[in-house]
Length: 278
Length: 128
Image (cartoon, rainbow over all chains, first blue to last red):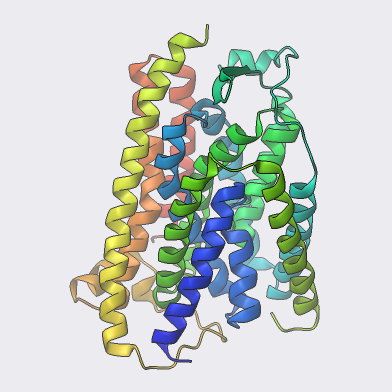
């Protein structure tokens, strides 16, 4: 394959990944690395580098579209970024020590896990339970727009969410993904934040988390311009399109479909890593 | 209780979103320009990312990237665009710290500055 064909095909695949990633709040990276390694036969280190860059583009590019909808919560995001950025540094250092085979297997497990989580059903309504006193002190409780007008929500279990976020950051630094799945898990499931607030705040945080490990990746020579160019541009265009559709989509069905795709990729990734194809 | 802080937060978020958008547009434009130059020269060259070699040092460090971009090398210009992209979330956190200080929310000023320091450590620590 020559560079022109490669650029066009990778660009098209990246567009699709970015579109689905933005819609579900799981980020484009989670399907991008399997796409590059399994289909385009790219070395996992280049794939991870390009993915990390595209993750920043996704997050920053879609932020404007999300913010106009008024879903995301800057205080929750900033506070949890303490955990994600420290985790990301830790993950990036870890990536230099472990083998590519191990990275492939961990990646597959994360995919399986994300896929299963995203298919789990949760009620989307904010509950009326009193907030975690820590959340109140940190000014995290907020309001989000729903069909029935502005709706108030309280934030629970801040320490659990914070610990999960460190893990999310470490996975992000190790695998070059935004680890939106773990971020959404921490906010949606552990902290009881409404799904749309979780996904948009997660999207907002992903760029900062990825930037924390991107410097390390750049200096290690993982970020190749020829590969990153179609990946970044494709994912960016896809995620912007996805963000436009977000407010009009039912979240439940979408999580089911994307969950199934992710599970399939996870199984393939683990198989590939074990048989030495990744 | 929620209304007061929501208003100012909302304004800050709009400014931050615009900051991010400008950063992404500028970096995407650089990547497109560099990409076209790269493809114009090497479009029919073989694409091979199967074997990991690592980037040459002039595409790993600030100095080298700036030099390659100024020499109008397509790959150098793409890399400069990517570097710019990596810098946008850093600028975002810096701006958030500033915005929280206007709101006199010192707790969040402190939180933002801490996040900023971690980001700078990663970017500058690896530039040497």
